[in-house]
Image (cartoon, rainbow, N blue to C red; front, side):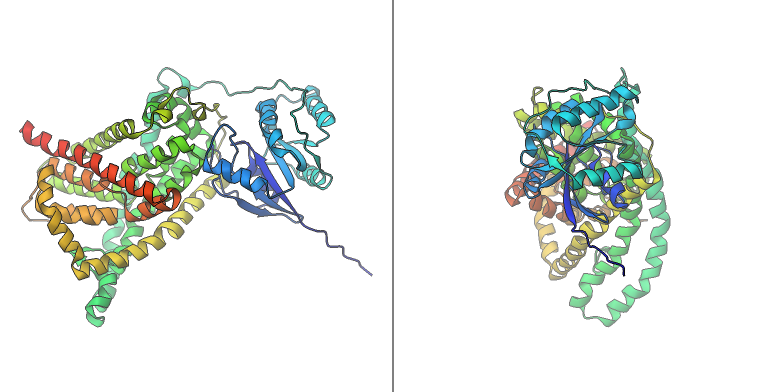
Length: 559
């Protein structure tokens, strides 16, 4: 007779500071892909993993000197669990223990020491852990969180099953370890220049890679869906066909004649951007860039760690806004403002470049000039906007919430790159796309009812403030709902061009920064509250109007 004993499952919470390897360890332990990467604050949700014997709860990294949403979330989750696996870095073991142990009063568990491959192997390092074990009565298991050995995972399970209470105070025994990577080219005299070049690479790849692919796919997709559009227009009543096939000046904004083009234009950009950002993140390169550029962005009310959130916005603004949960409360609003104002998403950027190129060709101008002008004017005005709207506290050089140590660089793995791509695409498909579908239908019905035409007519006289023709008002309205509305500015082939090259530049700039798209605005409202969202959008509209008016009239005075 065989007797099977069912062991009671136990829930274990993984706690630790940022970038200690909690997510990597939980994923390896559960033999599942991790859901975050090698940059600080990458975990912004509570994640759950399941092993044969344990339910693992992966929490965001704790930064005790910070008041970020993720730190609050981790502390709140910690109160609900009795068994904790404390994850600390061997490279700054004393510091991690001093900061984390007081938070674990009344809890039981063990300690996982990651980054063990960075410590010089030998009896001395192992004896240091043994002294800590003797004083704290806790098990200390050393490992490389990215690739823990089977024996190390077995030791972790035994340590959890025979867990001891965490001491109320840090141990008196000290390892004296403080291991930091050597400064590299990014920390040199011209480090900031190299960092800026690295930040431009995703944009250049988008322009010369993803957009070229979209140019190739666009006519093929248009030809494929045209029979369906014609069938809907012929078979459905006008009010029912409007959400599916509505058009304005040959520009479709119905779900059927616009939805596929969202994938054609935005999907390749999001995919390519996620590949580049995955390499930057998993190697630790993005953190090196942030450390180097921190002194430059501090006067703008941002920290170096906030910068990566703004960069995510060039793929899609929605996940970028969500990722700001890891920002300090004194700089989170600034980071969201930077995303909303200056991060041209994968839907806005192709439309902007297409209009600038077509406008330049129609005026007999080299298309590169307005493109360079756009990529120069957008970041400059974004920096001015942040400088004038950020709080003095967020710009204070003594604000210690903005400082962090230089991370180690490591080779990327295909698995890590795959995780980043999958995560980005999931956010794009399951968060942005459903809202897009709703907005697409509502916008089409508003257009069918004449509401958008009335609003455009009201705004037409205002276009003179920016030295733009009245016809540009329609694009402003549509771009405020969906950034692909910028396509409405494209000059028709063979028609007289109503705008100069500089006016095209002014129009696409204003349409892009006047308001965030409705999807982003709704996400900002969910994250920060509707009062913050309304106040931020009103402030953004004022500054965008001033910058656009200056740009629009400088050419007139120049001529």
